[in-house]
Image (cartoon, rainbow, N blue to C red; front, side, top):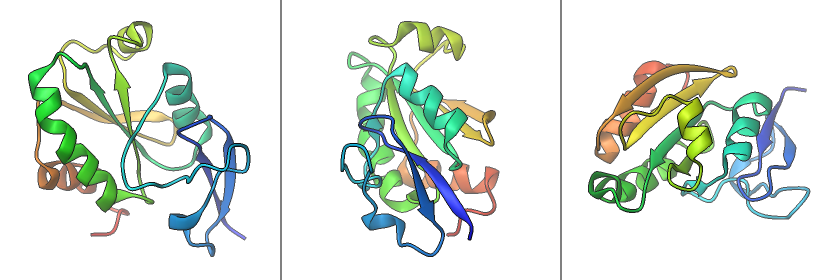
Length: 148
């Protein structure tokens, strides 16, 4: 039986999700939060590390800050992209003001910046605000296995 490892955006718990089980209704075995809510989780640097290193899903992280106008402009588009791309891709947000050390480790020079991780490594990054269609197309061009 093939299964995915899905890291909970709320508590960081690692959950085994069989391929045959519908992912949209799955809940965390540790905190009972839904694993896929159709919107990105705002996570810590530690949780981001777990998402990348322990989960088997590709991870798209939006590095943002509350004072950033383009970040606020792109937020609804990123949320809409989560509704389209989940459960094939995990979308998360990292507040660069709250998690400065993680932002520095990621080499963030401008925001908003999106970084796509797959197989535990960075495969692409882009800076600047994008629309929902641009975000989903950008991900699908880099991850052909993600269905349209």
